Amino acid sequence: MIYDAEREVFEAASSWLSSGFNVWLYTVVRTWGSSPRPIGSVMALRDDGRVVGSVSGGCIEDDLIHQLQTKGPPGETRPAIVEYGLNADEAHRFGLPCGGTLQLVQERLGAKSGLDTLLRAKRWPDCPPDVETFHR
Image 1 (tube, rainbow, N blue to C red):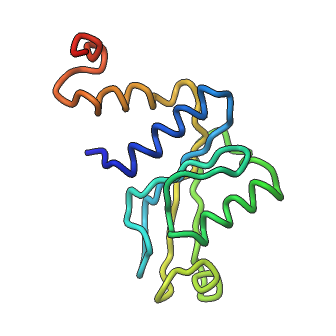
Image 2: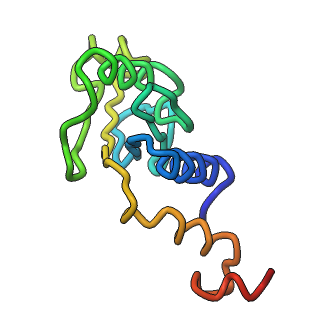
């Protein structure tokens, strides 16, 4: 099931891609200990630092934006694992309570990511994506 917050992320990412921006999607895939956001939380990051969605409530988003602005865009063309909170100092710095650890999948989105198909399928959940236009 796609929720409104996720839909907002996917719609923004799709729009940004259509406008020619580079976009990365971050998804919480694993947590240990306490975590501010549950598994499945998503965030899209545009190449100019604009963000929609949340993976932590703020501190990790700020770090991902900072890395983009200081080190340039992620060089990975394939999905990559990004971990936060591997030690107590880092957990505290990124606001992960009780020594929590957060694992994200970072993936660069593109024309073949299927966001438009996903959004069409969720707009008319009882119909295959290719027949959505018949319901207008």
